[in-house]
Image 1 (spheres, one colour):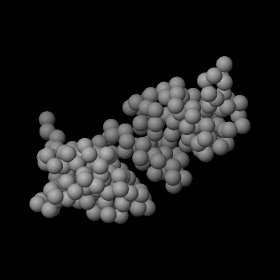
Image 2 (cartoon, helix red, strand yellow; image 1 turned 180 degrees about the horizontal axis):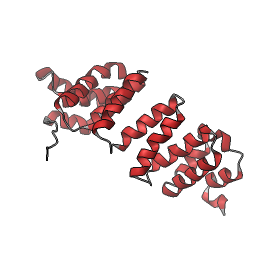
Image 3 (spheres, helix red, strand yellow; image 1 turned 180 degrees about the vertical axis):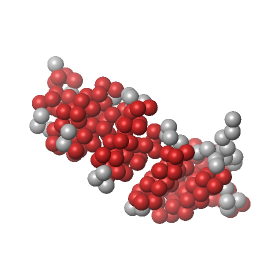
Image 4 (tube, rainbow, N blue to C red; image 1 turned 90 degrees about the horizontal axis):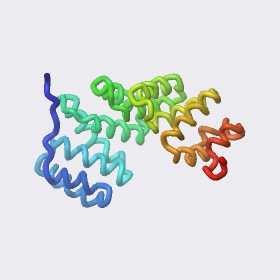
Length: 212
């Protein structure tokens, strides 16, 4: 059996990974020090890109580092789907949807069980009005994990927007059964605007005390 290759992670990069949420500026300084000594370190580029895009809201500056990490993963055959997903999310933030889809397609060709990639591609299709494609990708998620909370909730959203009211309500009921907090989320979610006046929807999203 062919072994999966993985990054060798320098200690400073590992520290940056753990610190990037609570202190992104310090984490960025750590990876920049690593890159000063080793400008091609793919894991340092990956963490640097994530810090810039998702913690400092600077996706334009993050793009180059995330692309370096992504290209290395693809060319060297490293096993790290998170690098694909980080680059894809950054591209979406920058409005580069066509390129983001290509990244997701490649990710899924290598990691067909990566549920976050299916979810992201479904969201991309949904945002473009391609509801059939979005629902097909959610079927891939729910076929692997029938109780996946995000998959169930998003399926309800997509079906509601599509106009499939009964199916949307069935999906929403299933989502709430898995994650009761979805009741509160659905109450104010614009995707369910077409269902708001329906008695079944009102019952599903009513606070538990009001449902008695």
